[in-house]
Amino acid sequence: MLAERETISKADQVDAAMAWHGGDPRATIEALLKDRGRLCEQLVVARACISKGYTRGWLPGTEFETAEECTV
Image (cartoon, rainbow, N blue to C red):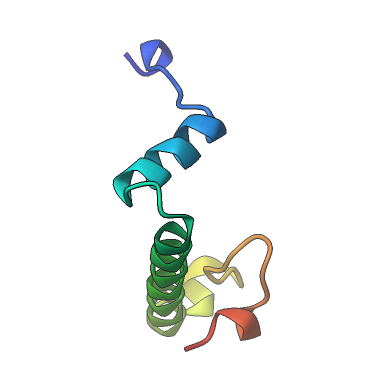
């Protein structure tokens, strides 16, 4: 059940990301920045594919960034 799933704490997520990259903080940050870039690319494509009429004015974006910051 969904209610029974354990949630992973933010500290555990950070530890897992660091462990994935052998404890190298620079490699971890580089990978996260590449992931962010890829997600921004996907948002640009989604914005181009989804019409404003279909979404009643809403466009996909990020909560903390403007559309200009996430352009490729």
